[in-house]
Image (cartoon, rainbow, N blue to C red; front, top):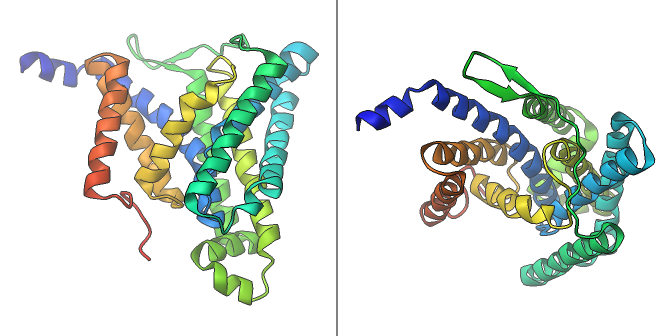
Length: 295
């Protein structure tokens, strides 16, 4: 008990909490795009994390192979991911709007394997690294925080604010919020839902590209990188209430802190176990999600 109390009030535990907060910023950004798409279109994109992978590969290729500066590489990565999101809806998702949920899952799951296969054909299965390190910020002699994670957290916060202002203050944002509440009435009012769905898919894809910009600085790029973040992103969205962007944002920080705290007291693998056990228990107690919108 004394050892547990000592660990709980250790300076390293404070560092763990801070790192959990920074990890939560990245996970929150991942969940924003998926929640936006589901909230408006009502189709879960199982392949969403693979769009992140596509953005990461493009950024790596432009910067490492072509020699383009990192900033324009990332800008093009975001734009291309937005186009991929738009095309995904135009070619596949639009045909699934009124399909049974199981058919939607099978189709978007098929897209997951399509993106993975395309990446293996073009780039192979090797792990590729940008080789960029921003160093760490020393808060004290014992507490160090990664500048990359700090940058990711800051950008995530800025994007959340921009997205909130866009959804609450702009005409298009108001239309997106309205159609997520009642699709039938918006259609009767003459709103072109097809264009709105395409716009939402492009924004969601752009958010995936932005997430790719932040992840490519921290992780190796390979065809299966989406499998590292896809399940976690989906779990966070379910935990917060599918389609609820605020709920998903909060759930991301809860999930991240559980991972880091579990990793502090044991191994990092046990941190994921703790987070998944919490998720399973929550599903029994509140299957609609912690912050699900009331119908």
